[in-house]
Length: 420
Image (tube, rainbow, N blue to C red):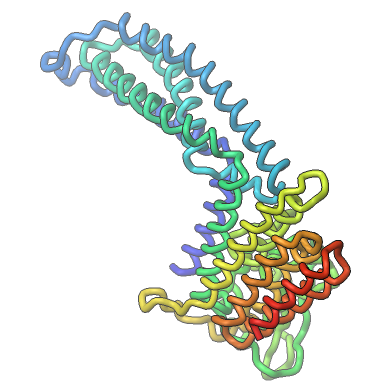
């Protein structure tokens, strides 16, 4: 069940990024509503409800059909503008998060779905022999759909005004990264166990090129149990896979690697064209860093955004240090699948390497970065302290070569010395 739930969650997240899913569901529900009204015929419902004429239902449906087509076109135009703004002002890598915005997707789906419902309803009313009960059911469904559209439109106006804004995009990236960090903290080895100190087994490669998005640990466990062997995962989600990079190493106590089907092992690794946020916490830090680096470019010259990114990254890395709550205990591990843990040094590299390079000439960015790293050195574990100290020294070194005054360089070094 755990394996099925994990697989289902991964694929549902991919489906949630598609805009056609909810309108398709609205089409199915519209047909269901027309059939429900047909079922009301001959039940005697018409003798207990107000008399609603077919002409009034047709008029309402016609008004909705004509107006919803215009509103849906307006919604599509507004969302396309928001998507373009997200790519131009933040990072194209944040685009999937903007597309997957629940409120905007629901609004667009509601408008298109209402248009579909209106067409289906008009066809049903004009071509079906509805009695008073059927007309009443169609009338109630139409009023209900109309109310949902009005509420959705009012809510969506506020949302679309902020959808493509840089602050909201940064918030979405930070939220997705926080979820990925919490998931990895609950399962530091993705549901497996730490690697052993043993000789490398038989390497498994794939001819595909792309980014590793998901690993079916339960599937690997079943394959290992079938041959009484073990598997060491060599690539974590987010790794760029090429034919020369091993996915895993196969171990067997009797005859190292014999009895395995490498093709079945490869099938447990989901490889795609782009990285995803679900199981790849490093990707969130990469996207945040790219947003900051774009803001620090000479064409934009917005150090304030870089400072905001530093604060977000500091908050995420601090969150990574927090202990697990009692109700977040990890699930039972797959003892035959060995997976390396996430290296905190990689998180620091993804978060601060680009910012310290591109922000070396901004005293305000350097100051905020040194203070953030000083704080992480003070409250983190030994690995976090070492990573923070490394990037603090690197930032100081870059500032020596930047166009800063001697007083600015002395100021940054003073902050660095305070953290020792």
